[in-house]
Amino acid sequence: MSGVEFRHLGRSGLIISEIAYGNWITHGSQVEEDAARACVNAALDAGITTYDTADVYAQGAAEEVLGRALKGQRRDGLEIFTKVYFPVGPGKNDRGLSRKHIMTSIDHSLRRLQTDYVDLYQAHRYDYETPLEETMQAFADVVHSGKAHYIGVSEWKASQIREAHALAKQLNIQLVSSQPQYSALWRVIEGEVVPTCEELGIGQIVWSPIAQGVLTGKYLPGQAPPAGSRATDKDNGFFVAKFLENQELLERVQQLKPIAEQAGLSMAQLAVAWVLQNSNVSAAIIGASRPEQVADNVAAAGVKLAPEVMKAIDEALDPVVDRDASKTESPRPRP
Image (cartoon, rainbow, N blue to C red):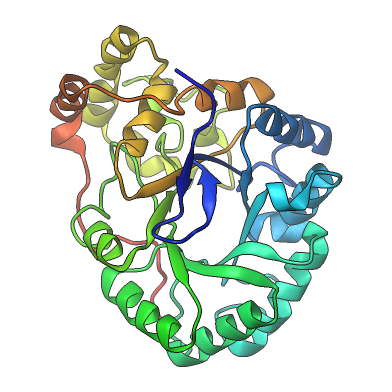
């Protein structure tokens, strides 16, 4: 094991830490600000330079906490990412990827983050109600005004990514990232999204590499979730539910424990290292409510899993892995 290593974001010139720190769910909601700052400090101390957030996380509070936590750091030594799409207010234009919402949201995000620009501005989901041409022109204007350096997408299908990439080229901007859910249990991007992105030079910045904590092995078959775990969170427990409803899945996850031990890793480290073996993955996003969680996950950086370890993981999980390419988180248009 070694310290944090770095990768290019797709085929762009931007170099990011292969472990990125994200503050979805935690900052501004579950975790008090002092603890959140301690986690960011732990990430900085570990060599993490890449920080991912979104305008909707804790209704803007997550961006504010991150901005305060990073204040005083050398800005050109960091890569700060944020996203736009989900509702951030009661107004009819406080959501989506319309020009109005994008141009308003980038200014609000920059103010909350206390920065003049973000390195990457991502469409948090696909907007079926706004012409893609309008969305991409707005993103182009954000980039050309210096408020973002690159653009990306999150949970878009391969066909949507391809169309957006073509428009981005016409507009002289770089669409360099896809931010999907990806783990040893959730491999829905492998069939279509990854091959398309490899062709187009787009890198994956993956979220939930430990499957909402399931791949740590803490959720045991036939037992109630541990107190204080994400599964018991009234607001976000549903993200874990799709895994916990499957007892065979929980049983098979336990088979990873001896594999991790033999590799000299914790189960969380094994899970993060697994996603980083995919050459199209530019970074794995980790979250934390305690500084020690950051240190544990960072230990997965630079780990090269032997072919026999990868084979053992596949054999343990194969019957419960989801590879359905049609499953993305993008909401359908309203009726």
